[in-house]
Image (cartoon, rainbow, N blue to C red; front, side, top):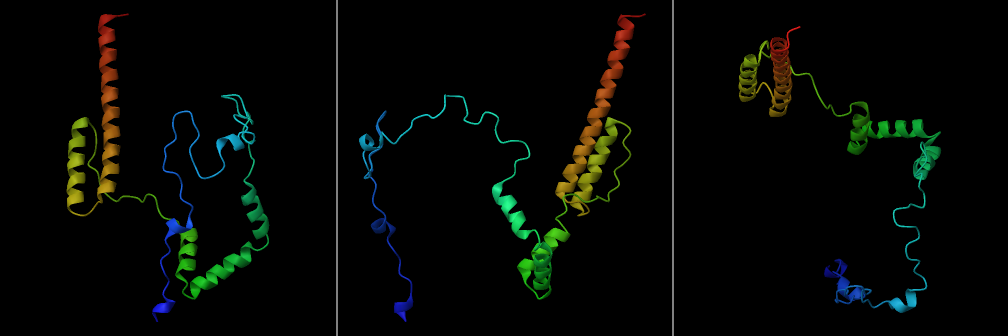
Length: 181
């Protein structure tokens, strides 16, 4: 019975060992392969001037990946058959097929409506009451912490709008006093 068990392979004995020397400044790295003198004729150096690409215009707009185009051609007439087959597998209990179908039919929800009554906000002072109500709702399990954070951001934006409006109103009054028409 022990003969059928897989044996561990020592990869160090299979792979050719590399030299442990670190490359010195300005010299090629020491390896067990061909020396740098032999390969210099093969090396091209920098094919383009520094800062200049071989394709300055880049990929043309609308150009598609060749693999995507090929996959679309292969699936062109077969998509409906494949979808029906996956649905049948899902009906038979194949969990991967079921997950695939559900992910396509019901994608994960990013946001959902929050059913929570925020106290009326007429001033920046009202924001304190609203944040207190949100905190109480989180403590009571009515809101999740992430929902509370989103609501707090809405209240914060409202308070900033009120403050900006108030600063603008005060500035306008000061200008009218200093520079009467």
